[in-house]
Length: 357
Image 1 (cartoon, rainbow, N blue to C red):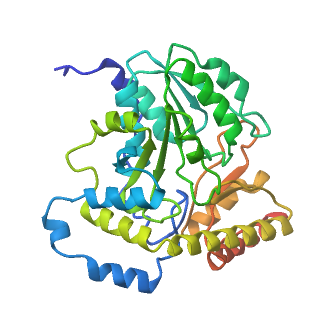
Image 2: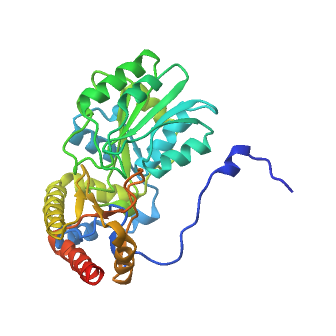
């Protein structure tokens, strides 16, 4: 029997993961925090977990108030979500009707493509050239009354590139003519010192999404938020589930806000690890591309496959390339602290020594 459903959903490509755990490996493939939280911070947090955090339904309003104070906005400007992933999903639910045009970057965060297909949008894809420069003029020109949403990851992943606020302002200004919302996904805020936050007061059509998964290191807890005008936030809020995030996620994120120095120290260590990694790779005559995130790109040329095999054998998880033509031999590596990056360099030296002799 053919079950009734939205016909276009059948063409959406999704695959299930395998049963193998990533937790016992060095996870340099998804830009998560690799090093453990400090012992004191972790120990203090564990003492705060009560059975009620598991037995009772979540209470999120106090966290709304704390996050609003931390950001210097009203809680009516915020919507808390299960990661920025879910924030992007409810933006599609609110703004996009079937066959609407949605402007997206390519490549970008994978779920943007998935949601575009699930909501049967017509994706207007804006790509990168051989220097990883985005075609901004094409993006601005594509904004018309047919468009219902513009989505820009800034910094973008997997490219790691950043669009400055003057350019974002141009995009917002053109979109404002047609009352089009522009969603700026700032998943890597913290690693990137720049933000579009200062543009919120000038553009009512701006939505910023952020996550606690990257610089805050809480990827497994799935918590993020949107910042926008009160009008847009009130609309997005209507699409929240009854309980948007769990109690343990709220507890951890709340304590991160109270102890933001933990995040600052992590960002500092990641920057030091990245500087070390780039220096050592360049010493080995390997080309690298730095980014505005916690990952870099490395050109292993014809040794790419051997390098991936070596990483796999040593339990180091690595992602593929950039996804832009001309960068096929590049590998993306999430950066950790210096000690963690020394393990990466040891593996690289081993492969190159065998490959070049």
